[in-house]
Image 1 (cartoon, one colour):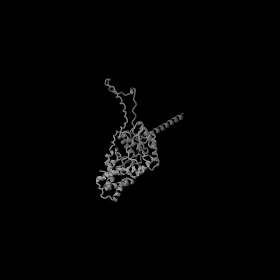
Image 2 (image 1 turned 135 degrees about the vertical axis):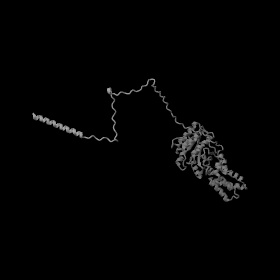
Image 3 (image 1 turned 90 degrees about the vertical axis):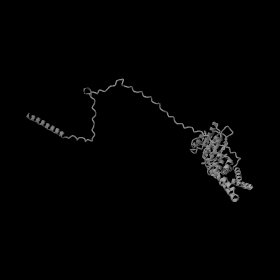
Image 4 (image 1 turned 180 degrees about the vertical axis):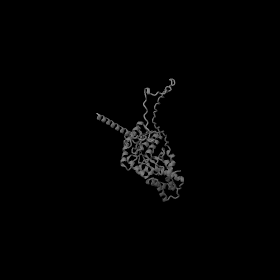
Length: 404
């Protein structure tokens, strides 16, 4: 029994010793050092609101009476959305073209500046006291340089030789009158130079404008529309030049200026189809004239020239083609005659339009091209202005050649 009690006591003492060691070891553990001042502190979440006896009494807030409380103002009605109408481009102002009667006379000074080498050169040579062979050769050379052509030059020199011999004494006035008379004979006064605009049937007059690239064909067509409108005719334009991207736009701009409608098609479309539609629209509108602008083409390209013949045939399904005007650049000289010859083989040319006759052009081309084709020069272009296309008047032209 005593042994048992002793064992229990020893066990209790052992347990106590072990407990003391554990507690002492815990006390010896050091807490981590406090965070340095730069370390941000973590704020504890706010305490939850208390209820019952632990609740904090709320502070008494001032209260307003019902009279002091204002009603909210009524919101202004929302403004109706503003509908912005798309701007409609203003219709172009219709211009009144300059009258064509006497237009060449008004442009005489401009024409004379570029033709002095021909007229004044001839007068100077003819005024020499002794007209020997050398002088006549210079006269002949002057005419050839002016693109009059070999055969017409020889004819003129022969007549001048004979007239001067008969005349005897030659005063400046006599020489001027003599030269004017002979040049008028050479240019020709018996041609019908009127642009035909009446078909003789219940259809508009149809005019087709042809020419090579770079002669100013589309511009000439637009200017011709102004000439016709100035003479009191209503016009429909056919933009059958579908190969040049800006051609239809350019022609339409010309038409809008004088109130003429333009019939056009897709770029690269069939020119004959557009020409056909233009005449059809002209008939429907009761227009006086339909002007058809065709694509510029090289006279050496057989396929393009054949296509021009197709345009002519298609247009003639509506009725006769009244005019085929060939536009020639007057500065190209004898090369223009080659072009004229080929075009005349494909379509029956009825008249010539000479552009760029101001500048460095040589007036003799008028004589040469008429002799080559047997058709008259009907219009001449004397500048860049919209009304610088004039009906050709032989007398005014020769006066400009000789000068004052």
